[in-house]
Length: 328
Image 1 (cartoon, rainbow, N blue to C red):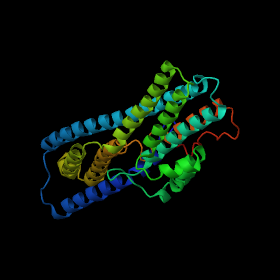
Image 2 (image 1 turned 135 degrees about the vertical axis):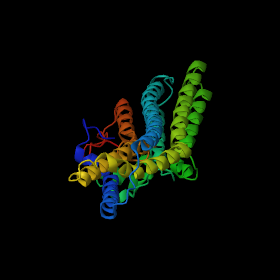
Image 3 (image 1 turned 120 degrees about the vertical axis):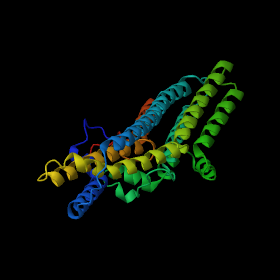
C-alpha cells in the first residue's frame, strides 16, 4: 500500500506507460494514413460518444466493486487485530491459577503462528491475479525476502518442531492451527482449570477467528466476475480504437494544426480510459502483493508486537518498514 499523500505524475505515467505509448503510436498511425491517402474515413463523434458512455458505466461498476473488495479486506484484517488482542488477553486472564505461564505463552505463540500462516496463505498466487515475478519487487526488498523465504521461517519459531511437522501435511494450515487451539482449550476445561462460561467464551473467540479466516479466504479465492471485467475491457478497446477517427473532423478546421491536435488528444483520451481501467484491475485482488494491496504483512507485524509485549518478551521484532513509500 502506498502511504504518501499522492502518487507523483511520473509514477502514474510510468505505471501506465504502455497504454500511453500504444495510444500515441496508434493515433499517429491513423493520422499519418489519413494525411497521406486523403481517404475520408473520419467518423461522426456522436455514435462514438454513445459507446464511451457504455464504457464509462462499465468502468464505474468495476472500480466501485473493486474498491468494495479492497475495503472489505481491510475491515476483515482490522477485525483480526481486535480479535487477536481479545484472544491473547483472555488466554492470560481467564484460566485458573493452576494453568502455567508456559501454557499461556505457548497458546499465544500458536495464535501468532496462525496469523503468519494465514498471511502467507493469502499471498499465494491465483490464476486471475497479477503474479509478478518476485525478482521484480525491487522497490520493497524486505517484502521480496519474505516472499522468497516462504512460510516456514516465520511460523516454525512459534510452534514445537513436532506440531509444525504435522501441520505441513495439510492443505489449509491456518485451519489446522485453530483446531489445535480448540483442543488445548478443551484439555484445559477437562482438567478443571476453566469454568463453563470461560470455556464457551474462549471457543467463541476461536469461532471469531475462523469467521475472519473464512471471510478473507472468500475474497482471495473468488475473483471479481470475469464476465464483467472482460466485457468492459473489450468494449473499451472498441471505443479507444474509434477515438482517432472521431477526432479527425473535429480538428480538421485547422489544417496546420490538424495532426498536432488529433494525435495528442487521442493519446490522452485513450490513456485516461486505460488508466481508470487499470486502477480497478489492480484493486480487485487485495492480497496479491501489488502496490495498492491491504498491507497484511504490516498488520501481522503489529499484532505480533502487541501480543509479545503482553507476554513481556524480549527481542520483539521492529514494525514493518516503509520502503520507497510502500507498506506491504
